[in-house]
Image 1: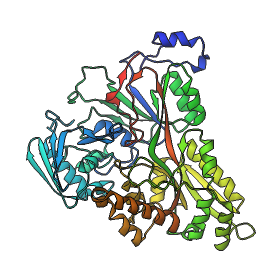
Image 2: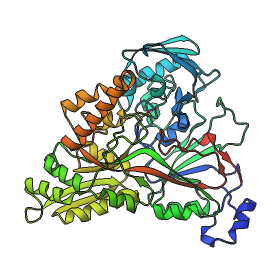
Image 3: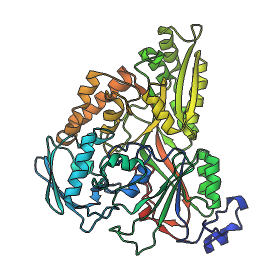
Image 4: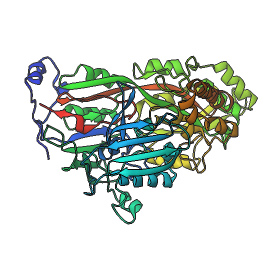
Length: 521
């Protein structure tokens, strides 16, 4: 058990006198404590890096590495496992030069053959975000440190290779039955940390330890242990942060963030993200199968009121893709229209004075922002003779229920696989059976045909791609009315003041690259 002291730096001692005792943070001496990350949702939903497609991003990005990494400053790909790359003039051939001396946690060398085997296995799974490699027709290991990709059509492969999902390089020879081996909570990555323990369903769910053979080395001060804890109650997470029991809280409500901003011994970080809040409507069954009911709910959302109530934690969404990514459509900020909502319900046979309507909604347990959205929507719909049965659930349980068509409205967050807008459309609104994240269960051939043109157009004709994104946005939101997007998340983090070097990268939502941090008193 780590030892805590009341204060570890002269700064904290000097400012303690002008703060209330409950608002002074206690921190452990540098080097003695693990980095403890707290979130409100389950950490691991899938251990296999070829299939991973959910919250475990926050852990796996510290365990596995990709060929490149997206740089939020340059807005381009930067080196990671690849030190350099080049493409042919037509964009159909890409060659990556690998970093020398890298080993997997299994001890095997990470070379071009391993990269080829890793990506080919991910492609073969055909699940999760494996679609990011759809353009690849062949992969060739030219020598130990050079790998070449031949594409069927041009895509920005350096950007694809930086994806938060399905781009991990891992040791495919770690075990004969690799899938079974992963599901036991093991890893085969090359990153700075490896799995020490995993306790599914427990508060202290996952612990990572440093990999001594990491190519980056450990001569500088680093955290050698990383813990991930699940604490759905934000007030409890806040108290744990004040006591110094945890290092980093990934999201605070506006009230607690305001307190964190003036609390001695804490640092805060606030920035716009690539993460959107979504209400996905069941287009396949139940009362929401009627497009008029879907349109009524879409018009009933108090978009502006929610933005005001979130007090800086959110920005208005325009279209489906957030600003800063290809596919963003400006000038589409939604507005509440209760007159139109009532009219649509009346056309469907519901509403004031007509037969009552009951809808089932699920959202993430412990997410205060989603709870605010749901509470306000409940109150609004009640005036329209609509009862909203809302159920807060742990993410894994909510997701599993959603895959079984278990609700009328599914509330969730979405972010890109890599820094491009296609992720929202290709995964959330493209036909998929069984559904993974298409939890609106939308099956529309016209939408699918339009979406299928976007990846190539993004490279070959940006203007045409942008027009395609605008058409897809209108098709999904206006014509098929598959959902509503009430806001774009503004990240509001809080962490211990002794932590140096933290920087938010919106392409990897909620990820802390712990190796890059410097623990200090």
